[in-house]
Amino acid sequence: MTTAVLVFTFGPVQSFIIEARRASDLFVGSAILSELAKAAAQAIGVNDLVYPASVSSDVPNVLVARVPAANAKSIAEQAEQKLYTRWKEIAESARNKFVKWGFTDPTFDNIWQRQVEHMWEVYWVAAEETTDYAEAYARARAALDAVKRSRIFTACDEPGIKDTLSGLREALHCSGQVGYSAIKEFWQMIAQHPSVGPSLLRSAGRERLDAIGAVKRFCNLADKQFPSVSEASAASTSRQVICNLADKQFPSVSTITALDFIERARQRAPNQLQAHRDAVDELLGEYAYQPRAQDNDWPFDGDLLFAETLTKNRLEDSYALTQPDRDKLDAARRTLKALYKAVGGSPSPYYALLVLDGDSMGRRINECLKQQNSQQAHKQLSQSLANFASQVQNLFQSTPGCLIYNGGDDVLAFLPLAWVLEKAQALSQAFDQVSKNAPVPGTVSAGIALVHHLHPLDAALRAARAAEREAKRVAGKAAVCITALKRSGERVTAATKWNSLGVLQSLIAHLQGGNLSTGFVTDASLSLEAIPDNQTEMLQAELRRQARRHGAEPWVRSGKADQLASQLSDWSAQLPNRVDDLRRWLGIARFIVRESQENNIA
Image (cartoon, rainbow, N blue to C red; front, side):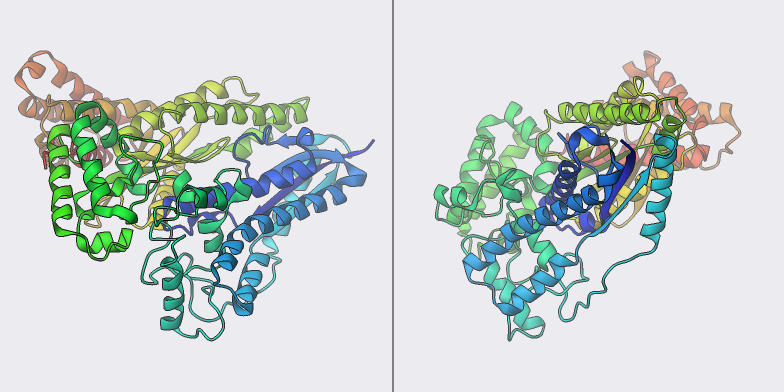
């Protein structure tokens, strides 16, 4: 029987994911993409897949399979149909809520159908194996690239007031609602519905969704990842019930930002944490919602651990509490201040967004195709990526709710600032370990954006993606790039090899542990500016002088100051722009130490 190599893909991917205002938007968007790819993969036949090797984790939007040549067209068409069917199921689970709440009419439905039907572009190519798998795969990929460059899609007019997630498509509304004010009022009514609330939709009509954004906010994903609406409704009839269930499944950015603080509070100040929990519960009353209901110590959103949330404007915006009781508000502020004091500091307002991707995957696949059994080599490479996905899942078991997407060599995750370096290093090491058993070894690179929890999420994701691209520019790759987006607007970016990240971690540990004052970073950054890149001895001597000057006396006497200076000098020799890049890394180290706020008593 003649076989063919089928390559199946769909999009858009990046634009669909990046249209996000909340962590749950990002999570659900990624989950939808995986669900659609999984539906197509199952139609093709999981046993026929060459890539991915498994559909047990997140599934990428590119599928490669070896199928009977005579049936290739019908198999691809079935996969396309299954993808669209699954998308319509997911979309309909969201639309049904608007129907149930009484917010639909023919105008609403027409906008919904137009946007849902024109969302996805599906491409596939099947190449018959005339000689072998490698030759057929190469032809299929070349043909697919040509088809995608043709940009064959249906033009779709999007008139009227645009949605606030993408800014590109018409916001959903009913007939007779024309103009900004009318559509804003429509979405204000939706936000005020007892089953919605501010955890799902900003109040006062400040969020207006199109069909795609509404699917992300309201879909059930066939109740596979989220509880059903009936289950949620049965739990309570108060404003505490949030019918989406993305927010319940995936924590907010503020919650992720505060995770390390919650752990410290649980260990150091359990009584003060309970007192603040009780004060918040008393303050919010029926307006409280508990996205972390499984955590008895802190069931609320992490934003209530930040002092700036306990203001009239923020409580109205985030919890629809328009007239907070003054005494209860003052009590919550007091318990929060006592909690800060007992823990030893306030939570960092910054978190990390990590994007990790395999290096030179095209080259690795081409090397597999050169081997005697090219199909087996390609499948073994796919299996190594599936093994890495399993390792990633294990690595994030201790940080539940932080992993957004885990599709082989492609990982997207949120992390508290204090945990990101250790977790990123662990991911790199896990990839290296798994890659050793692959038919063609490889490396991985990552981009990390350090972002304030109130910074726009789409901008944070763009910064992380840009950092990833910068890491990919490092010679030989196997690199990490960190971008610190300061609240002031200043941005500091630096890239290095994974094997040098330990020096950064060591520097941070000395700064946080009191062995070295942050004055070292300030003074060293200034003095190094005058040192040429080729003056190795001068650079090391200046680093040693500054480390001795700003180091604790016992630490200096132990020789650790000189050791750190030597490590920093050796690290700089590996950086493309030796002195300037080292100064950037010093700035990032100071940023992480300062914003961790471990010793900042409120």
